[in-house]
Every structure is written in structure tokens, then in C-alpha cells.
Length: 412
Image (tube, rainbow, N blue to C red; front, side, top):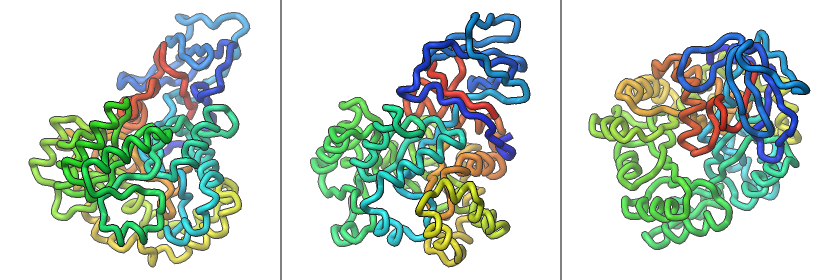
């Protein structure tokens, strides 16, 4: 169950640059293949290079002579987890302005630590939802060359917004793009993609015409667009503007709840929604019940030289500005999450990992748990949201264990 994930062994066979010529056989595991069908005990998965070449039952699939055999008895074998919404430029620090001022020249180092955390805890593909473009490109390319560990990355660079210039100039993220016209929105989209972005993030304040300009240009260049949305109006602009998926809808930021019109639009279009319902509303009470979690030795190692500053920043957790509306959000989010799922919206895994106290190491399992307990999804629904459906959202050839797909496989 998502409430009891314990990742014991990780195979990153599908990671770019890691191709192996020897056949690898994963034998005897309890297979959840990401198709939505029933699990298969005593399964065999054969991998050649980066690709799955055979899947079946022991006795039906022959293990080739000379294959490297992994005994998976006692493990669940499943597709690598996919997170459609991570922030590589942050590591859980409690105060954004302080953090960005401290690491502005070190985004590449921060992103390397974030990527390593994600991969070590089962995430084999992730979309970085808005970081400094050059550092993001460097990090993605270093992973692809096998120089550093990390998941397959789809990067966005700075997000595109339409804000008052004074407000935009004072924002601690100095790498975002502020636009005021349709042409500026289109040109900025092209600039990001030419600079190496894989996916565009449309942020707040954008008009319908600006949104359409962003999506038209991104689609013309073969890229996808995700939109940061909370309200009915934002969701409708994003969907009518042609975006490919939504971040945050259903996370408890709109009160009263969503209108029937908005719910019907999400359900009819089947636009993927990464709710990110756990990064505030379940993290907050979990931290209060166990504040010692931030002193974990393994976490300290994963945070590298930034560990002391991050841990100190979380000492007065209840006073962090990030949780200013937490009591309202804790009341609304369970209803909003359940509302979206009951209406038939398509939910995918999207965590917002890296935000205050919400470490890359535990974001997916926290979101999985919240989707079961709050949204009413079954454990199998959530596994599909984090594998098959997230892969389809990001358009990567992974998310299921079947011949012809990339061998992103974890053993749990």
C-alpha cells in the first residue's frame, strides 16, 4: 500500500547513458506492471540494454544463459515512480527569500542534491516545474551523460507570468519571465524552448489569449505546457487556452469549492491534474506530531552542506509564512480532492517537492497516502497515477512494465 512504501532496491536501467548489453533477469517478484490489471506473483522480467524485452511467469519465460539474475522473491516489482511536479532548486528550506539569496550562485549544486534524493527514493522520471534555466539544463544533461545520479528530467526553466512589474521585480525567484502582451508570451515560450526547456510552465495572471499563444508556440515546437492553477477562473483559462496538464487544482486554495462547470470541464477533457494536496495539509500535522523527523541522519546526508541551514529554518514550523492559511486549507483540501476524484477528473502524481519541510525523499509517498485517505482513490488508482498516467502526461516511454518500454523498474 502507498501508506507503507519501503524502497529497498532501485534499478535505474532506463536512465539515459546507462545501457547494458548483458541481459538482466528479474526473477520471482510480485509484479505490479502499471497496466491496472491484477498483480502477478512469481514473475520474470527480462531487460536488454535500456529496454524491457519480455514479461511473464516463471516457467513460461526462459532466462537466457549468461544473464545477470536478480532474485526478486519477497519484493514487489513495479514501474519507477513519476512525479510531474518537483522543484530541483529548493531542498525544503522554510523561508524562500532567505534560501534563494543564499544559493543563487549554487543552483547547480542544489539541483544535483535534489536529483539524487529523488532517484534514491524511487522516482525515475520527474518534471522540474520552474528553475533557473541554465542550471536546469546542465543538471539534466549531466544525468543523461551518467555523470551524476538522478531521474530522467523534463525541465521547464523559469515560469511565465503576467504580473505588475514592481511585484515581479521584487520576487525572490529572479529567473521567471514577466509578460504583458500576447507577442511577449509567444516570444518567451520560444526563448525557453530554444534555451533547452522540455516543458513550459504557465503561471498566474495570464489572459486567455496569452495562454493560447504559449500553448500554440510550445505545441508547434513539439513541447507541452503545464499550468499553475487554483481557482475556477484559472482552471477554465488554462483548459480553454490549450494547456496539457494542471498543477495544484484541488489542493485546498479555493473556498467555496469548485463549480459544476469547472468540474465538468476537467472531467470531459480528462486533462491530467497533479493536485499536490500533501505538501501543506498533511505535512503540517505530520510534522507537529513528529518534529524530530528533520534530524534524521540520512536526511542530513542527502541535504549536503545545506543541512544545518535547512534544519534551523524549520525549527519554528508553525510560524512559517508558507503555512499562513493552513487551518483553512486543512478543512478545504480533503473536500476539494474528493470532489475532483468523484467528478471523474484524471489525477496524476504531482507533489511540489522541495517546498518548506517537504523533502524530495518522501514527497511521493506522502502524496500517495493523501490521495488514498483524502481523495478516496484506491491504492491501485494511486499507483497508476504515479506510473502509467504520469508517463502519459509527460509523454515518456515508461510507466509500465511491458516489452518495448524503457526499463525503469523499482523493487519494493
